[in-house]
Length: 211
Image (cartoon, rainbow, N blue to C red; front, side, top):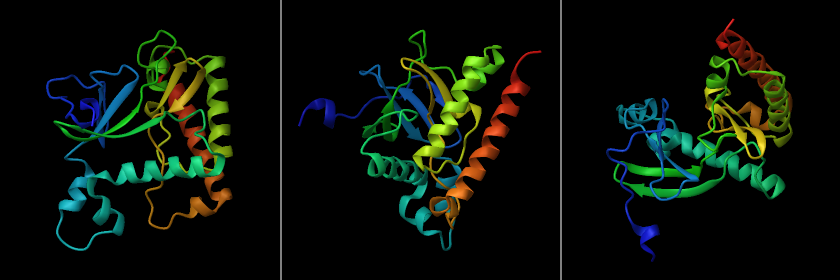
């Protein structure tokens, strides 16, 4: 087996590119187009698993990696429906072993300048939410609606602007947290939630944009 597959990737001492509530994101040390998402050991899902007593099935089985399970499930649903991934999702490259624990290897999305793609939060704070970006927001939500995928966290920090091709990409927020997943079976419920999330996102962008 090639060393590139079997070796443990060293991330200790490397500065994260981003940090969220559930995971910490690092640049892959050998592949510029790959990011490594390492779960936070103190995330609420790890804490939920550590508590004594009965647990929900998903928490019992997937422990602190339950978000990975939800995300991967939606990726599989997308491929099952169309045979390919929609353009608003980064590619997945599987799982890797690192000195900080397991990592989810995902495509790095670059912005128009070749640097890591800026989030909508960053664009808003820089006063760069123009008609073009708003048109891309419309296209993104139309694509999500058409895909049939379920989303859970469509806030401005989970959406980035790619330069090639010119598009918005959802880097976090797939899957459903609830026990009874109505939106998986009900298109009406899913579209209603999407419309609400879009209005909340646009309001947040207006709030963050300089006067």
